[in-house]
Image (cartoon, rainbow, N blue to C red; front, side, top):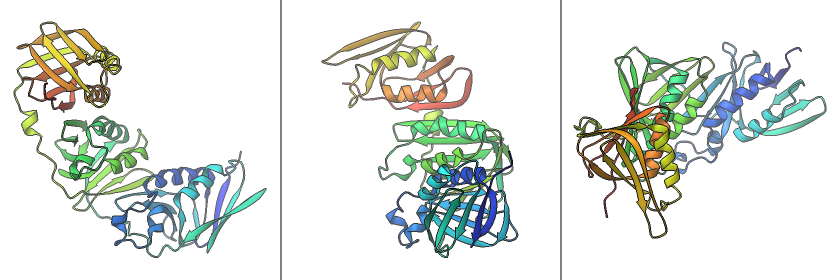
Length: 384
């Protein structure tokens, strides 16, 4: 079957495939704001700029689509031929719905002007368009800091994301992720002040660098790259830039100080337990039926050859013993059941996990026994 084409005439005027347009719209729409943040009003009085997709065609470059919410931006190259240069804004959600509904086996024509008219064999619709005059400047400079695979980048973010705060508590670093590159490794750290997750993946480092960026923005950005492609990452004072084969993304640097983790990581641990990760995850899942969601505490007792999980409330009680290799003095500690469970699933429950601690008031470190590239530190709960 011949490849169907999508024609954009007027301002701009270009030709590309319906499939290419749909993929590009789905990718860049992730960066568009559903509602422009109030804090951006002074910078961008036209709120429609932040909820729209820019269709841009120039005579010397391939056409492209761009969108930004003010801090995160994504640009998609659109394979096709530019017949007439131009720029126009279309509401992101509207264009996404249209792209999804386009007949895959039909030729679709888009005519851009005061409104964008979409026509196909048996019908037509129009979309409201906006002037692209005040669309934020998407240019960014920065020398390449590192190159990493899309798969490694996605894995890194997925493994540390659980430790970031889901709500803004006034401390910007708790909803952010700290990235650093040196000695052939890309390191990511996240914390909500009750736990800390640190991950490392191999990469090709051209120069060392570090930056603090929004966790939400980084999650959006990593979704657009395929696991097979190589992603070039550049750090500068204002942005972190990600360049792949088809997509380019930019995240604004967060102006905050990430806590120094060395005190937690370099603390000498006096007790160590190795147990099956899947068995521990299953025990924590069963304990969820007893633990009060508003008081998610779980008691852990580490003794010779076993780890005992227990929790007693006025309604119910649960106690489960797991086989383990335990070294050091016996320790009793109370931890947040949900945080331990999330750490296990982020690290991967297949195979043994290592738990290290010094006492009931000390933080617990948990990692895969066969993989020290990822570690989670969880602060204990107060007894009583």
